[in-house]
Structures are given as C-alpha cells and as structure tokens.
Length: 276
Image (cartoon, rainbow, N blue to C red; front, side, top):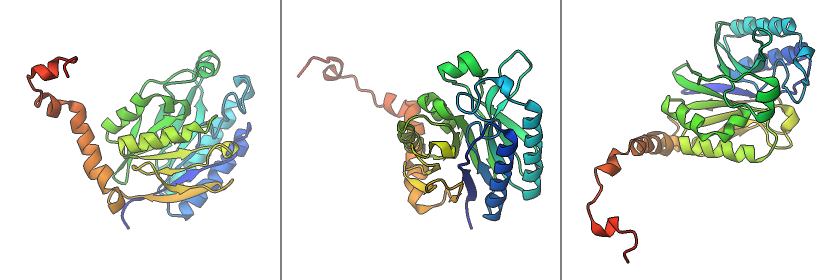
C-alpha cells in the first residue's frame, strides 16, 4: 500500500483535562487499531478552549494538564503513533499561555509545538500570547504543517506552507461560522495540498471534521457526532495528478514572475490604456 494513513478526531471537549485526556487516549487507540500513523485533534482538545470551556486561566490545573500530556506521550510511544494535539501551553506567570498544537512523535517525544500566530481580538487581549513561527514536520516521507482556527482568515500563512513544501496542512479549530469550511476548501485547491480539519463535536452543526483533497473536495468526512475518521494520503493517486504534478509546479513558476517578465512587449497599444 502506498501513502500514509491519518486519523482525524472529533471529540467532545470538556473543562476537565482528566476527561479530555481519557478521550484523547481512547481515540488514539482506535486510530492505531485502524493502522493510522498520525492522529490529529482539535484546538484546545486537552486543556479546553478559552471562551468556551475556560473563562479564566485560574480555572485550569496545569499540573493535571501536564500529567495528562505525559500519559498521552507515553501511549504514543506504545502505539507507535504520531499525535498532533491542541492545548493551551502555560508560560511563566504573569504571561498568558500560547494556544498550541503539540507535535508528538511515534517515539513519544515532543518534537515541536505550533503556537497560534494570529489570535482573535478577544484571544490576544484576554487569553493568549502569540506565536510567530510556522511548524513543518515529516512522517513517512510526507510533509505536514500546522494552523489553528481563525488563522483561516490569513492567506499568507497557507501560501507560506505551500512554499515550505507541505503536502497536508493540519488545521485544528473550534469554528464559530459555517463559512470556515469554504475557506479551508479554497486553500486546499489554491495551494494544491490536503487540508485536514479536526473540529470538536460541539461544532458539528456548523460542519463535520474531514480531509479535503488538493482539488477542494472531501476524501473523508465524519458523520454526525462520530469521533474518528481514518483515511489515506497518497500523492500518487491518479485523481491528484493535475494538482500535484501540473498545477502546483506551474503556480510556483508563475509566482516567480520570470515567465511573464521575459514576455513583456514594447508596444504603444500596450502602454496606452485609453486606446481603442
């Protein structure tokens, strides 16, 4: 079999990190049983998400969050499973936490952390400290990148990941409107990569979690309140020949601009914008 199997989680998120940790580990086991190599979770899946489960950071027991994270890391090693997990990441007081995605390898190691760069107005003024860097990592020869929720409104992040060679963008979110889905589908088609959306069960009335292909269509979508979808990324799929082998290389060439500049013409009828 070619490609890589990925699992997309759609858990219900609570304000109790112990409950969330148990849910995460249960879905990890199901992902491993389905031969997935990577499982993705939504924004705030472990700690809870500010504005929804959390009204104030004093409500969060960070030692409990850390303990649950360590159990998740240990299980990742046991299952030989990569985990991308949404959680608030505490900083040194009085600094506010980051809104993060932990990247945990199949050896159970925390190999990177994506910190949300573009926080919403409420997030940046009341809840979170911003991050500033993209995160890219490789699993079984496939390159992944990370983005979180409201960052869907910032096209430059998605084009940056295309330039970094990402083949699948892991978009973990807690969406508040249904237009979110259309934006994610557009980025997949424009940048010619998969977009994997992991969302909480609480937002299934807006859209389900799922995997969007480089053509902007769905390869997999969760049904109802189901907790997990497993699907395969295969860059050699004949249905993806156009986006991967033709459209993406051509657009990269076009963006450099030389192919246009070398064909510029010195013509009065080109320079004069009022001539008929």
